Image (cartoon, rainbow, N blue to C red; front, side, top):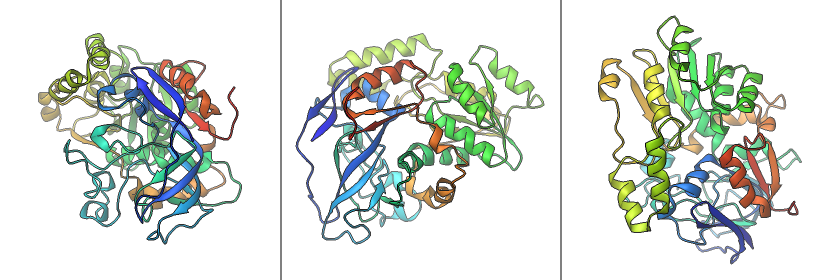
Length: 397
């Protein structure tokens, strides 16, 4: 089959790799019809290559048609249309039963002491072949995949249940905004877009910040008040909230935020070091650009909540502990527990009025063969790029 593979820092290519097969009785094989490029994939593209091997298949936002099932999979049948959550969870361990599927005790990576395995990610999360491919082996298919209607509706109506939509829903839930309160969203990439839309849907006042005009325009279309990323944006938003700050702030940016040239250099350097040296740097130093999380802490009102949905990777990042303590700020974060939120989201996604705008987020739908070029376009925010979906059935441009 054809699949998008990691080849080096800022280098990916589509190669022919072996077709996946049923390896365990709880496996399924899915023929991919749509698979998205995530902002988290860009971290692999640029920063976290020390934990990836050349030839690893990337991608963790797939959906498609079930082609084969293992002997113990009774919830799926060949021909079902399914969305595959990015985290691989068993459904029966203590963590899964308590809504913490991202911490699944069955698929944790003991070598690194990390949470549930993820599709198409690093050694720290299981190094499981990903979904930017023609076919995908899905472990624990007796629990993970989400069956969606085979009614001819566009894939984009359902695709984002794989990651970014439940990630945004969790981010807003974790922000703990009171009824009628104010939510700020920092970063209007795909997760930030959905976080802003969810906040507006829930009746919050939404203040959203991003340096890209095309992203601000898209968020404004869905009810957010939008602001450019300037040095004065924090006091500006505080002034708009009676001098207190928003009740909750979602940081939808993560480790590659604007505003810290030294950390940007450290990330670039880590991406170019030999793997063993880079791993040591990442595991013992602070290599994240923290401008967004620091802005969130400065912005949120006293007694408010900062919700981190952007990915951070440094293990020694400096944090403003005095400010967190003095302002009595709650901080919530973590990988999304996808299956936990599906029952909340399915009625909204199924609604033909499309209240969360799942059908207008994708700006680029291209062939799998065009993936290397689109990684670069997405990283550089060129051509009005907000969300890229790869379709293995399309011919290369």
